[in-house]
Length: 340
Image (cartoon, rainbow, N blue to C red; front, top):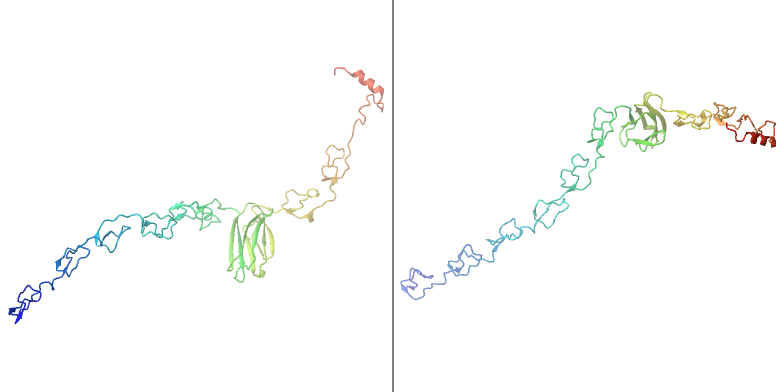
């Protein structure tokens, strides 16, 4: 049987007994790059044809480098470790949207002063916003105006003259537009308040000895409004909507209701609540000049009645004859030059 009888040939036929010269030694060979480290390595190649190359797959294989090439199989050196680094936190003031690696440079502006009301523990840069008032208050639990929410002692603690304004609403839906205003007798507003919702609320004040006025407006439903003041001199002061009530704080009666018109007979300089209906203007007029012969120390207003005693109504009448004449001049010349 004719065929290829060479066992090294691609078409070797083990049944052939006569070599007919058809042996093929090339068709079964695979040429290519047989180096696994090459970019064009061919695992099916059986013979290396010298075509191996190492450039097209070379690149930066370090994933932390900015020029990292995920397709590179041959490390060719990384050159850039800066262009892709920056702040990756979107909440930071220097957020860099192009950064893929955080370099720890993120900046968070805010108050960095421990103890400030708005201290921000996450802030890295102080922006000058620190404030120390909104959280100030009395931190002494024994004071009547102790504020459990206060973080900074502001010196406002009150241990005497603690006055509480207790507000109530009988329906339980707040004061519906009604509100109180607390003033001193000079009209200076010291505080105000209302019940926004619910049936009760309390405001606390530390007041100096004196006279004060609480004025409560009516609102939509004045019949539901009630209030009382605890800490006023003489006991609890209470009222409702549409009222203005005067009360004392401290010892004794600090509210002096009287006549404050200076020309009135009963003018009282200590008056802090004027009532002109009390003023009396009759019966206190007279001579108010102390040098007058009819001076009246009890007179409040001068009535023009003052009279004055004059020892010599004609001082040039030197000889006392009731007239000023040449005789008076001679009297003068006679005395002129004498040493007294």
